Image (tube, rainbow, N blue to C red; front, side, top):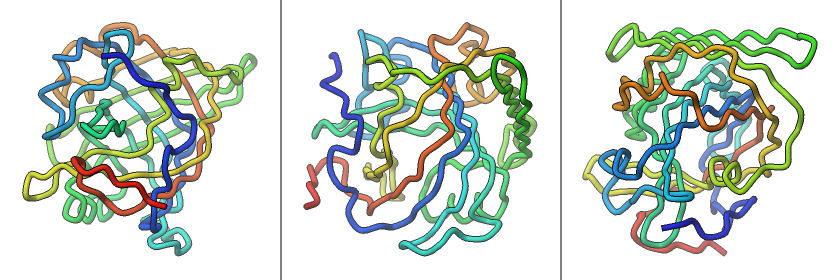
Length: 255
């Protein structure tokens, strides 16, 4: 099944603000896979989203900044940290497209512990470092991650990219980045959709200089990170607003 037209802004308002956050200095590294490879990782009622017959696995390191609850200013210290995600893409019966997270490494232990309890997302505590170096031809960013808890302890990732020029995103690049929510399973095994809103991604070309990654394999995709990725992109970031979670199987339109 091929994707319908991908919207560049949220297709519907996210509703009442539950929390806000800024996603900054992101690098998107994507590999194409057959849909049946990722199907077992989809929550109930969600199928792999595809483009030209392929679905995708992504490694996304970035800086999470200024998380705020219910419209309040960002929480000091605990609301800003480095994060690295392994994520997939799904679509439900209502046509809602969203991210499915396999793992979310974060550098704040308390934030990880609280988030695991209250959201059900697979947050993991990790030692992380981000360095940005100005160079001729484009800044070089190096993201380092080493998992601490829970295991497998020591699973690591090193991503080094050189940032290029601003680009006009292709249909595939829109498909990979223009996502307006996430799917997750609650404690009762019910699938929920958590909508968000943010501006259109400002995207830049990026060159992968070095990748040494174990997180993709730890998420259930051994050998994938040994292959050249099909797409590498960078963004300086966007400000994001999340609304309340909705059941994934009920089409909810907020006016």
